[in-house]
Length: 102
Image 1: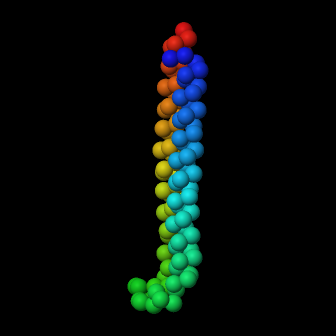
Image 2: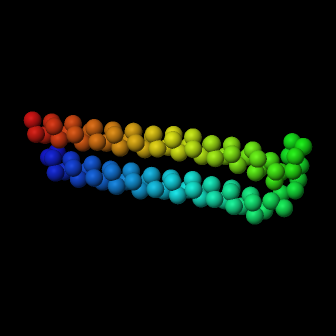
Image 3: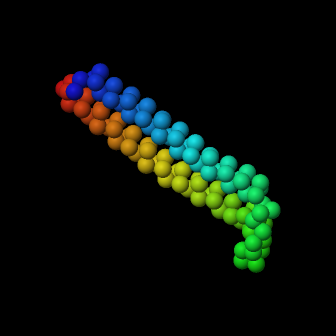
């Protein structure tokens, strides 16, 4: 494997990483928007009791905040996994280029 092919593989890996990162961000932002605006919009219809409180109150006071924390934790986990995959690909590519040149 020559250096040009190695660079091409690494560029493709970076492009794939960026696409997956954007898709993940868009999906999590969509969940955030649905919870934030959907919970507010349908608050009157959410009038059943949940642990002794109206569900709309519980959702605004506790549930949404817990979901936001879960979204942040999942984003950190998923991005760590994506970054590790890119790092591994770059490492393989550089090792293959070094072995081909030397």
